[in-house]
Image (tube, rainbow, N blue to C red; front, top):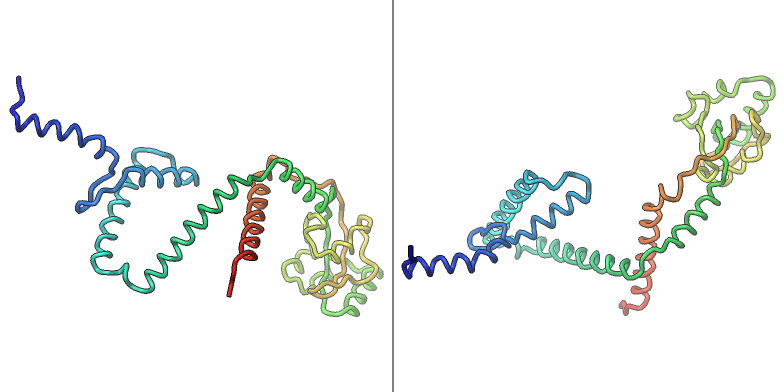
Length: 259
């Protein structure tokens, strides 16, 4: 069987056009939508753990991309892209996208090293300490009120009963219980108030913080259960990367001529 000239021409055109068309998701009102747009969205969704790359997901995203293109074309036809508030929003979005690209490239060229992560982890351990404490407290407005409570405790009153008058409503009905925590979790002056106490001991003098005056009781002490380096490494890397970006931004701002 032989092709007639017209059919042969159509066949050749179809073959030649096939690779280019395969790169498009669809053509909406004459405008091609590249398949890479769906690929990028799928990659982002999968990376965020929201779903797995499946034909069903791709079909859903394809429909959404086509619908958005239809709406975009209608919005452009109606002139919404010319509105001042829309142009401002587009400028802001463009700025964000470009800046994020710069930030990614900067971190790629100035990556957080394992040595930096280790140093930050060691600093965290030093600040946190190797012990955690189970403490209770009673918070009042005045130093005299705190002294009165200490006197009552020395007279045999139960800490849990006196804690009911605490200003800290979150612990007042729970015996003033602050549960287990490391000293770094508290204001320094509060932590200094209980670190040298013996189990079952109460502060001899009121401890003052920005919240008022505290009477503190130490229930128990145990070895701190700190997360391992591997457990917190991603968080440390992210924190250090953000610090590098902040320092880079500050450096660029200082160099800029701002009038």
